[in-house]
View 1 (cartoon, rainbow, N blue to C red):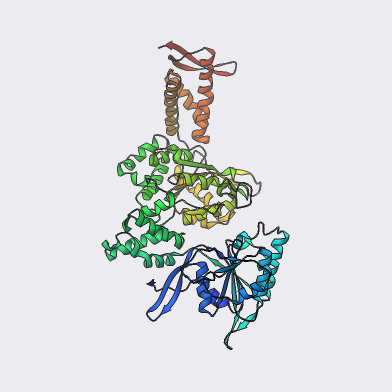
View 2: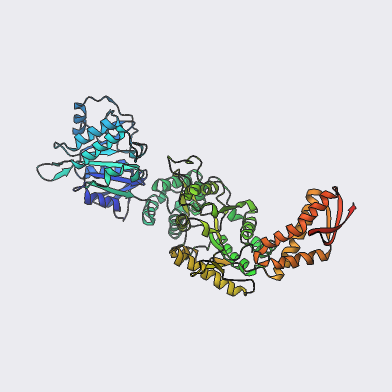
Length: 633
């Protein structure tokens, strides 16, 4: 044990404060962790990390309780740490209940009562009610795994209802016992549950003697205490200077936000098992989170990013300002400077981007291009269409349904995707279409870099880049007519468009939703895309013609040559649809070129290996067609 200068936890102090006036303590949340129990000595205060069962036992023993008995559905009533025949067991023996051998594993306290008494839940409830009303000796009973006592807290069967009616009666009528002719000690009931709403609400809501205490995951200070007390167990720690150890401790604490003490212990063991020194603690944490994976972020070299702008502009045309802004944020992520204004080491996502602007201007294509640039795979961009999440219960579709609900086994679409590809770009298209309640989930992801799915598994987003796209700011609703009015147009200069779009985004989150905290998480990472200009339209049309030529040869061995007049005609039509962006240009090319070209090839039986010269367009009886010449090559 290590001497630590820490204070008792909040929930420990709550127990101390309320143990004399409450009879029932419902402990929920992080109940399967290990906790530092304070032990005072002449040398100071020591802390021993123990499981919750033992923590409660030590707490009660220090307060004069000799009779601490445990109960669960599998093993019945048993003494886990104390020895000898307690008052509780004498009371149990007076009933007609079967005695059997205690099958529990030994813990750090070795001396235990060898017997247990088997009892079904409703029988156990009656016994607990009797024991809590005894006035011979103070007794504490600890109910383990209480979340598993009933199937549905809102629809109890007769046995379940009788069980909790007995527990409620025992809680309301628990007595206080005088000890050594001095102080009085109340009989206590401890209920350990994953969530308080796993229990029937009437058991605790109107019970004046019930106290709900939530056990949270260790905060930054608590994690620091565990790391301080166990740093000696990390591989080759003796070889580091005191300054280097402090630096690595700070890194360790920052990267383990949300971790339990048990998980910190697992990291310590993994470090020793894989012989990874303290300076590689980030690799240990990554291995623990994601398994044995190479880290693509470490493979992104300087030369790759030097050519990033030309790589992106080859696919995203006419968005130079948006490209530069995006790359600034990406470079910050790659170099590890993302989020340094918050803390030196963080478990937040690698980067966050909010792409806004007119439709069809390259927002989605930019996300796919970034995935290709960083991970050499367009499929590393995981896209979620937020128009599919417009209902209040849509978060279950995204994160997984809770136990007992339809779809629980399937898991959530987002959580499954990030488990399979933790090193990825997450694209949430048209975020404004999602139900506002889903924004709360995104807030947690942006702040903590993790999320717990419906199955209780924690998934991590700290190796991903999150991109939201939106058309906010393009239209506003007229207050008098209720009609949508366009705020921006292609005639506006880019800076004016940017100003209007950002104002529209701020109005939406601040005024319409009343959620300014979302904007705070985004910061200055809003990247505005401008309208397609004539120069951009020329580039897009030319790029599309080159793509058609290339794919026609790859797929059908057709050699296609376009006359310059074809380009001129398509550009003219494209400029008529420029407000619809690159998508509008694509529609023009599909209508004016691909449809008549396919018709010509099919109607004329053009074979593989042929050459086609597209000379121009012709309109016959209102139908657009092509003037083409076929040559055999």
